[in-house]
Image 1 (tube, rainbow, N blue to C red):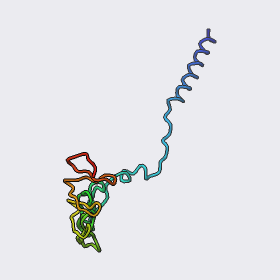
Image 2: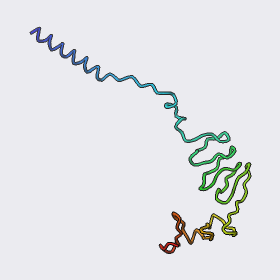
Image 3: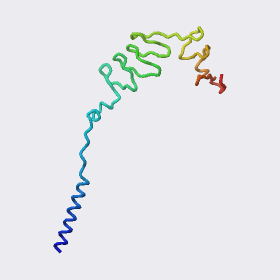
Image 4: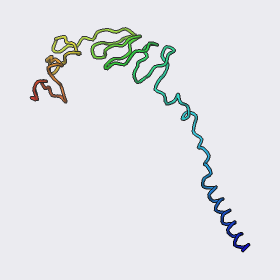
Length: 137
């Protein structure tokens, strides 16, 4: 009987050791500091001493400005890349010409030496389409 109790005790002891090995937590894996630093993953930077969001804002010579389509920094302001140029921080107007005729690219475009208005025509993959019809010109 004593032998039976000793055998049971030994089984329980071995089973406890085996379970203890399995539930013991594994040591943490050391990662480089850059992966643990919250600032490394943030989308903001500093502009003129203030935080700014690089996704939503431009930093133009220390001035935060909201991003807009077709706009870029020129000095401390934004300019329209379609109709304006920038040289040494100064904005100047770009003159668009189509067969000698000046046009504003904000409301019109040139196709085959003819000016068309964006509200009347669409240019797609080399073809011109009137907005009121599906017929190609």
